[in-house]
Image (cartoon, rainbow, N blue to C red; front, side):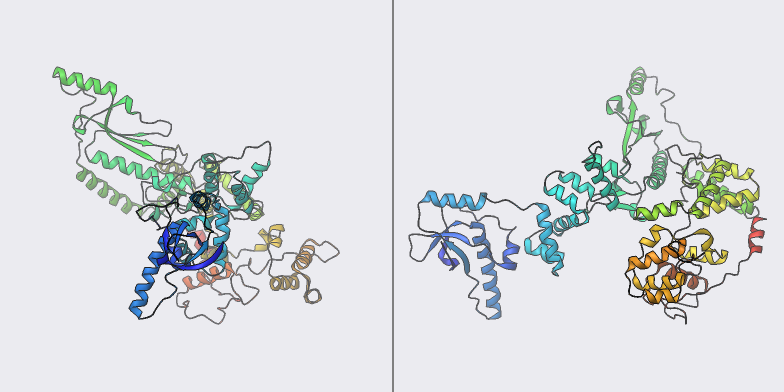
Length: 624
């Protein structure tokens, strides 16, 4: 066998080629690659009866793709007035002359004896191309792949290496791998721990999805409301197709409100009844008969545990339908309990009455601020069709950080006060938050707005203010400018509420910052003596001084600059969230100082000072 470039016009497809046919084969999948890189793998040919000509034993599709590309290049060169001598050449491996059986064998071997690369191998190669500077669009065009298909393969990079190896070894199937792309790194590690535990069961397939979402995975497509406009967080698989709501409780808040609105729309449209089936009950078609609206047919809203709502219009139970048929046959008319009832008010007059009553009530509230305050707190706790308050989750990707916050003194004090408020409001004492109602939900929440409002009216002002403080604390967003504004107003002494722990010290990586911290806790002499030490050594010095261990002098009440109120940075590089949040708070309080006109201290290492005009007198006046 020898390799040569042979002109396309001297090649033809052999009848012994397994792809031989009068009609040209489909080459749409390889055509982009041939356009971009040409034919890389030579086709197998053998001499035919005409001197200097060859017939293709294997490589029919490459041949036809090369013909299309050659014609395109000739046209392009002709338009530009330039010759293209290489456009009509094809790399070929010339076989020795042999019988047809040998040619057929070569064709079969070329087309059958191939092992397609597994998805992990493709991911490895595609990642190398991306690192070399190729864009996703370029790679997709070169290999004739849809960009979505390429992104699906690249998405495997977000899986832990061991999970990819399990998939490559076919120890987990494609469905399990796909569901694992929904998992965080900590969830992936937890799942691998179950795999390694001989006494544990590692869920796979659809069971894995339930495990990831704590038994309830709600697809975004099941929402009756506008999911994008709602602002609810969603989790999408890395293949870009399936998306699920991250917070099922928040979903049911809005879904139940949408179900109630859907029911009201059907009633207003003239249906005699709209039945909302609870989660544990399902609509069975064999137990009902189709009945039109004019004959008293009902609408059934079948609510599923996965958030889906199936609507069945115009049905009665078989027993009711039989009674209706019997009554019609006897001429007795509709049964009394099935006869459509004409409402006393039209929908227009009902709206008129509702709006005027609403206007009168809120006008009266102007003179009763104490009642308004209690009503507002009840709305914040229970939620309504117009209110939805989100609790700050206080969660981090790092489990050590989450555990540190859960065990700190400030959280312990707040949780004790929260338990007291739950007791005062007659709410279950094992609830994680005071906020968390479902408004008009069907899920049996203890937080009923009217009941909470009635309870708050019974409480004296100081207790109501305690409830308000808990509700505000639960819904105060971490890392926000609001935290900075409140912290400055209250003069929060961080040293009373926080002390350095392992999660904090182990998270420090910047040597310049560590050097500055060593100087703060140990002094300039110690910092200078350890200027060239590694980060681990510097963290050890800080830890020993804070604990008074290893013969080092104990440093009491130390708080890093980022933690203090107001916060500041250790370097001029920026990137400190608390400093930026403090700066934004200052600009909101003093809008004349815009982001485009920084002040003298508006630098990465400085702070923006602002002073609130509120005072303790304001707090006393509000309580009164």
